[in-house]
Image 1 (cartoon, helix red, strand yellow):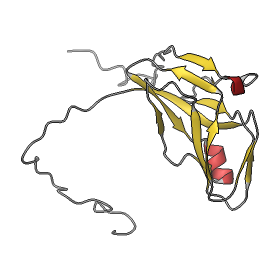
Image 2 (cartoon, rainbow, N blue to C red; image 1 turned 60 degrees about the horizontal axis):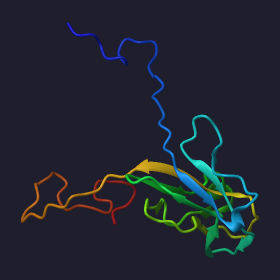
Image 3 (cartoon, helix red, strand yellow; image 1 turned 90 degrees about the vertical axis):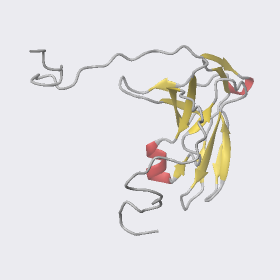
Image 4 (cartoon, rainbow, N blue to C red; image 1 turned 90 degrees about the horizontal axis):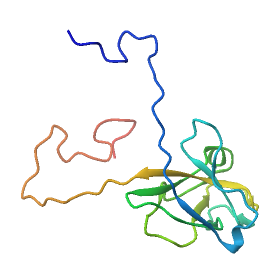
Length: 169
C-alpha cells in the first residue's frame, strides 16, 4: 500500500511552496531618481507595488501612460504583468484598461502603467504614489498546428454567455 498524498489525512492541509526569486536587472532613469523601487508590501504578496514618476490629474474617462522612471531587462522566458491596485479600482475607479499589461523580455524602454479613470471625479496622482502592481510570470508560447477539423465538444461553438448566467447574449 502506497502512502497517502501529503494533503490526505494530514492536519497540515496546506504547506508552504517554495517561492523562486527571479533576478531582473533594473535601471533608474533620470525621472526615477529618489523614488522607491518596486517592492512587495507583504510576505505573501504576488505583486510588487510600483510608483509614479510624475504628477498628473486623470479626468473622468481619461487615460494616461504613467511614467515610473524605470527600465528593466526581464530574463528570457518571463514577462512582467502590469495589474491594477484593487484599492484604487474600488475607491476611485482607477484601473489598468489592458489588464494585465505585458512587458516583454526584449523591451528596454521606460515601464509605463496605462491608467484610466472610470470614476466620476478627477483623480490626482503625485510623484511617488503607488499606481499599479507588477507580477513576474513564466511565458508559455503556442505552437500552432493548423487542421481541417477540430475535435467535437458538448459546448460546440456556443460562446458569449452560452453556458448560462444572468442573461443570454
